[in-house]
Amino acid sequence: MDPQNIATPPRQLTAAEVGACVRLFRELRHWSQEQLAEISGLNVRTIQRVEQGSSASFDTRRALARAFEFEDIDALNKPFSVPSTEELQAAQADFEREHITLAMSPLTSGRQLASLVTSCEMDLSEPAFELPREAAEEFAVLVDYYRDYRDCHDLYSETQKLEVYEDLQRHVDALRALGVSLCHGSRKVRVGLAQPGIDPLIATVLYVVAFRVGHEPAQIATPKAARIG
Image (tube, rainbow, N blue to C red):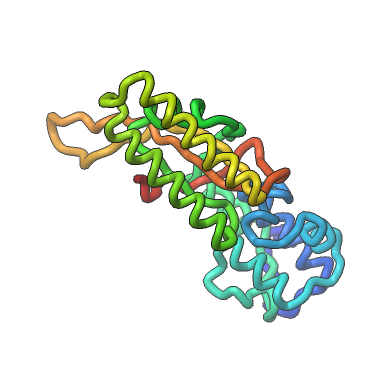
């Protein structure tokens, strides 16, 4: 039997093994080191050191386990069974079956955001990392604003739309001043229950995601099934 297809018995992992596991789990999800840093709340240099086999603190291992959505956030601090090649392949297949990869682009202006919002029937708007309180409030106000605008934009005159663009721009600028950058992507989804003779609604979903300035990814992996507003 191929030794690579045999999981090792549970034991405390060495720093090098933790690094190898972190890199494998990250690559299974098609994440860059920058994306893992954002999701875990760690800095990129820490991710690099861990993957290179340097020792990681208890809290760092916890943050990584939480980022990978382990049921036990102390999994990397306890005796751990290194998965076999077959188990890794199965995990990757499961992840790819449940997720899609979206291309992301910078969101730079209020006018651009207004156009994106009105061209999509719904949105999924969320931060990619834990925002400080002031930034979280600013982001929430922005989301509420453009959702309200999407629902009744056809009632606005062209002059009123200019005011909306300016308001949205102020929120985008305020977030950037707080170290938060916005990116956007979109996807088509089927909405509604499958019923005989009734075709599901095909809708476009706008993704507006907040990242730390300077850490904006070119793409993200997102669950196929998601709560969409």
